Image 1 (spheres, rainbow, N blue to C red):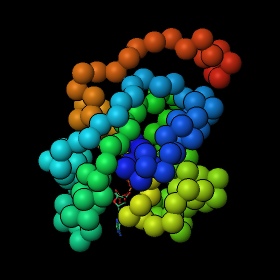
Image 2 (cartoon, protein in one colour; image 1 turned 180 degrees about the vertical axis):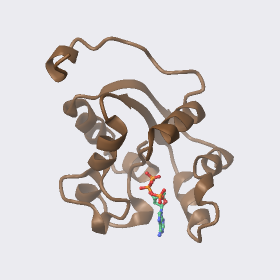
Image 3 (cartoon, protein in one colour; image 1 turned 30 degrees about the horizontal axis):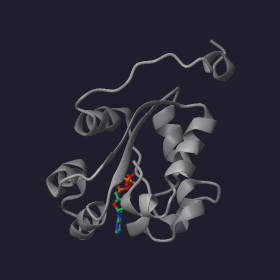
Image 4 (cartoon, rainbow, N blue to C red; image 1 turned 45 degrees about the vertical axis):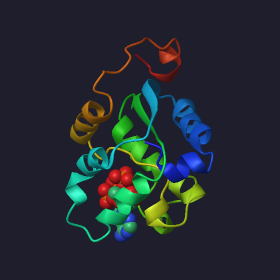
Length: 143
Ligand SMILES: Nc1ncnc2c1ncn2[C@@H]1O[C@H](COP(=O)(O)OP(=O)(O)OP(=O)(O)O)[C@@H](O)[C@H]1O
């Protein structure tokens, strides 16, 4: 997901391009202005944290761009592409390392496991995702 700061800072194309160029396949994409209750459900595991209210304010401050990307090891590798949660610890070359400064404005979210990806896909795309065959597959995967 591209968070409100990523949208406002015109990073949507840059972030999508990184995933496309890596070789992952886009399965769903939409811009959304979620209700606070939806964001509270998304971040339910952080509800006990002191920064929770600020996190929900931040996430509700503008539209987000939600995406589903598919590919071998996409959850693990996608998190590497995002970089560490705190931009001060994110390697240069990662999205957060290259484009942000503070943890509370870290421009993107990525599911941290396949289980949480499945849960989050249901939460953000109840209508389902798009099944399609990419003609580039044979150039990205051996078989
Ligand atoms: N100390 C903090 N102060 C302010 N915001 C924070 C802090 N820690 C985390 N956050 C915010 O909460 C989000 C979720 O934190 P979490 O620990 O789940 O990290 P993450 O899984 O890397 O992030 P995300 O779920 O956004 O991909 C962070 O991306 C960040 O926007």
